[in-house]
Image (cartoon, rainbow, N blue to C red; front, side, top):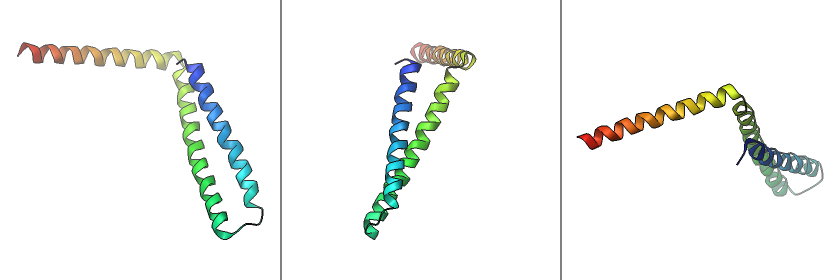
Length: 94
């Protein structure tokens, strides 16, 4: 999956949450039973938490698109792989 694909998926899901939050928030202004009101309010809270998570992931994706950060993460992953290879060679040599 490319960064663009990941970003698109995240933005679509965040947009769905925003739309649903707006709809349910408007519904909360309408008369309804107390239990129904609490259920709808609970759903709105859950959707807001999910939206916050999608926004964090979206910011992380934007940071990852920075070439410097992407290169640095690649360097770190390669260094970890080399360390794992050295450790495996040491275990086999024992």
